Every structure is written in structure tokens, then in C-alpha cells.
Amino acid sequence: MAKRSLYHTIELEVLICKKNLEPKSCILYVPIFKNLSKDEQDAVCLISTHQKRSKGSFIYTSGDILNSLYVIHRGKVKVSKFNDEGKEQVIRILEKGDFFGEMAIFSEELMSSTAEVIEDAVICLVDKDELKKLMVTSPELSFKMMTELSKRLVKAEELIENTNIQKAIYRVAHLLLENHKNGIVTFKTTKQNLAKQVGLTPETFSRKLKELESLGLIITLNHKTIEIVNIEQFKDEIMRF
Image (cartoon, rainbow, N blue to C red; front, side, top):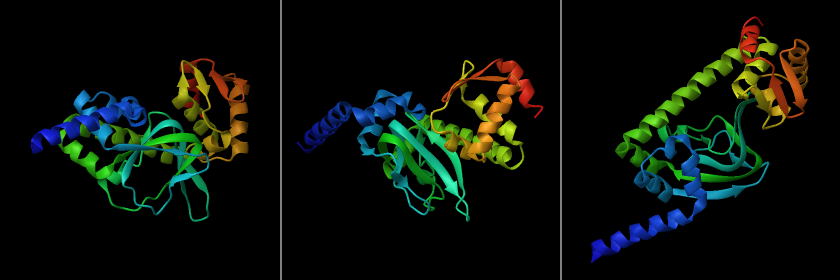
């Protein structure tokens, strides 16, 4: 009788999870979760909750300890760090399908970054301890998590190199190249945030965009959209900056 009761409890939880579209949608959109088996996705869904956050609110700040992996279902989040003088370095601008706070899974250390909502958002929270248990039983999930972390380490190294070594025009050009789709770059946040992402002032960022346009490498379609005229030529040219 006890076994039957437990069975029905689990079945009921899975049914509730399937009807709760926020966490289910989060899981389906996130690269590390979307190719899992149906049972594995249901298991992740069961340990997930969601919350609505308003623009300007902070999901966590430097010094916090995290208990969840965060997944963006709607809206945008800015992850950044501040130096001792209060200067901000934007690390990533995240949107639907992106996740953050992953280091909480592997470490109990205090956070050194800050996550701010820059567009009203719905955030799904996956319980850290329960997710770790799932990673033990799912090699696919563990592999995907490590692959994603490796990609982020490479991008972090590139960010440090570009900020500390490369010229301003190269940083701007590299940012455009990273974010284009078929030669079209659509800014998904303010130029101020983009400038901070490459360690420049908004004024310098705008000047370098104009410089790239004067060289015939880009065309400004509107204040949010830029066209790279010729991708291969653009790649060749930025290596000379």
C-alpha cells in the first residue's frame, strides 16, 4: 500500500510539473537540458521553481551564496563585476535559454559577481543539491554541463585578453563578429552595457562604431541594428587593428 501511495505521489508530481509551463519551458530551451531523455527532463522539472523579477532588481550580488542554478525563461539579465573603485565590467548579457550561477553547483564560495535584471524577467531556479544528485546518475547532463563551462572559460580568457591588450577598435569589431547572424548584429541591450562588456566608455564605443563605418566595414541600419558588409573581409581587417 505504501509503495502504491509513493507511486501515485510521483506520478502526480510529474503531472503537475508538466502543467507548470514556466519550469518545463526553461528546461526545453536550455542547451544542457533540452537533449536529455523525457524522464531526465521530468526529473529536472520536479526540482525547479520559477519567479518573476522586475527590471532593476538583483538576483544576487557579490558576497552571496547561491542555492540554485538560474535559467532565464523571459527577459534579460546582466552579469558583471565591480573593481575596488566601483568600475563595472560586464561579463555577460543573458536572455531566454541562458543559465547562470553554475559555479554554485561545484563550490560553496561566495559569489564575486552581480546579476541584475535589465528587462522584466521570469527566472527558473533549479535546486543545486538535487541537480548534483541528477548529475551523478546522468552522464549526459554532466558532460553537457562541463562542455558549457569549458566554453565559458574560453570566452572569459578572450574577454580578459581583449580588455587588457587589444585596441579599442578591435574590441568593438570582435564584439560585432561574435554577435552577428548572417551579417546582421542586433543590439539586445544598451550601448552603455555593450561598452562595459569590452571595457570601454559609451563615448569611445560609439566613436569606434563610426570609425568602422567610415572604413566601409559596417552599415548602421538603425540605433539597434548594424550590418557587416562582408564577413570574410571584416575578419581579415580586424586582424590588422
